[in-house]
Length: 380
Image 1 (cartoon, one colour):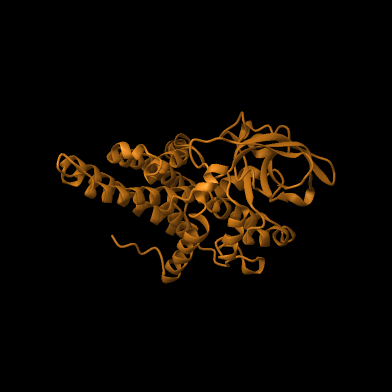
Image 2: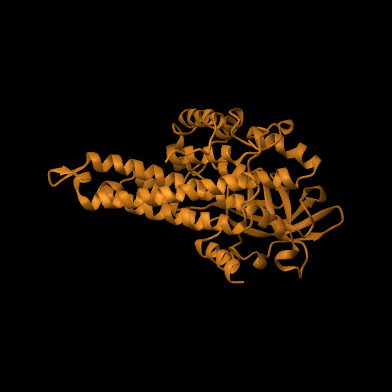
């Protein structure tokens, strides 16, 4: 069915994204995979093309349009390109809202211009070695020292961890507060005691740097408190809906793209003297995946519309996230199967999509956490 989500302006922006990918990303992506991190110059190029901070006000160097549909365009085109290294969706969709909605005027002027130019690469540090999705279990803590916080702790699985110049750290600021005693502290590159561990060796997304971070008596200025003191949990909850919608948007776009690739493949690939597409089983497989993608696309597009009007709640964002990412996992596996032995070869995009996409049902909240949120809302 015809999509009516985007305007002519969004489609013009889509061409900008495609041109950027063709010129600044795809020629280098294999090398980034080998080195385990993208070039910083790619971030600067993204800034020059206006791909960073589309929702940031113009006075700080952003696009000045608070419209998630532009973020969705970026996600869709990156999905089609298989460009998993340059974490622009994390930068724009996850970090951006924290800075635009919580930062003081002084903080905005200090951080947002670099955020939009690509000179400041960002990350958010929630997960710890002993506490995954359990914010109440975090041990990273900050002690009030008058004019600064003294931060100690460790984080792991931090996307952009190697490159990040600015890290939003979730830390306990009261010893007895649990999740509701956390605050968001911004740690900047070069602060004494802030150390990066190894660039973690993942099964997929090889070009996207993911690191361990360590904080040893880091003196974080009081001016780097983001949002309300002890308000970290509420701030995180308020921003998770967009993060999960972003992941869902990417997931359904990947599924659709892989279905397109596989449809073309089974039309050309012959077995037993005729194209695979002539076999009824193959046609049924394609029909099932096409239907699932179409139904999921309709729901995700509706969620994007609801988000644009301020109506997307945590429950429906969780529905979109778990359903779309599980669809991506399912479609990727079935499409690889239809490619046969060639699907297992790394020169075929389906093989890279198989390893890159496995994280989708885990980060941003696992499928199990999403179901718990939904179930709790219905059965409380």
